[in-house]
Length: 190
Image (cartoon, rainbow, N blue to C red; front, side):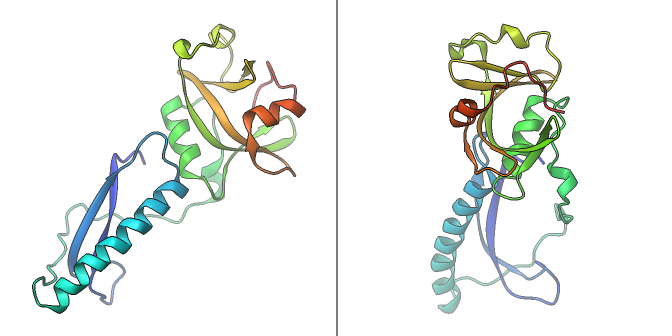
């Protein structure tokens, strides 16, 4: 969704889903490098610490729950597998967020020929990264470029470096390992 931050809250149980009165909240910034798995782990730790801090305050009567405001309330729809399909004509920012959002599960996926390929980690690639990305300047979205044992792919408005990838029937691996058994330079994801 592109949110800049998220967080955890301690609330009292109620009849509805997440509708109880609130106790304490804590937030964290969502960085470009953060995957859902990393965010889950950070929020898990944050929630545990917040609970250990809040529960004694509630028991001592130092803190009492307050009603949640109705503004800003959103409902998250169930995620479908189709949402995890990568459309390389989208912006590189949208692609980075999508790929990181579906890591670890179900894994953002694309196709290379007839084979399904999952992409788990990417980062923005810049021309000052010490690599020549000129081959991708006029290339179609989804085109691979291999340089210095690194794997790059063209998005609609720039280039992403693929860091972790999984070919059909294979295990997840770093891009450099993937390149040892796959000659994909100039190939196009579809």
